[in-house]
Image (cartoon, rainbow, N blue to C red):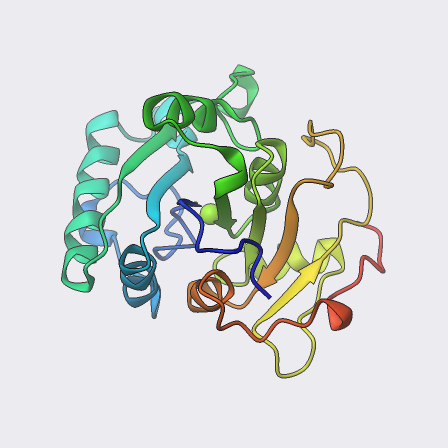
Length: 226
Ligand SMILES: [Mg+2]
């Protein structure tokens, strides 16, 4: 089950709980730790020709918990940890604002997408998003990407439960539908964007490079309300 005939040109990734361990308001580069298999997965996406873009909400900056330079130090450490796997981040965007700021860049808003689209000449139909929160899923949907994926690492288990999404027995990937219109959803509907529940980034690689065992007919269903 490949959402595109070829691996997408760009894969957008949340950071905390998706690539690295979610250490609430991470400010110390010594605390950056790759999730198991994340380095290998991103290396394989790079080898398949995908550009990797990190989009991350960092409200700890706006709240005064840490500084821009702390965020950048953590980003440098992340890129250092990814290098041995042959994984390089093409670009990163972060939203430094508090949720109450009403900015356009905080996911599920699409400000970070618009910035990267302009800078890299990206077409949303050639992009895929993966993250561990509903905001990440809606970011890819609002941007009109080919696919948007919720991973079960980080906060993903609890978010999947809220959506009523469950992986079928023995599967690492399943195509899903939203139970209803969700707060923060600005796209008219999910017509353009296929939604997937994935066990982890390794399952994303298999989904995007054609090796995924994903059966849409046995996909998870939007059975329970949020
Ligand atoms: Mg996250």
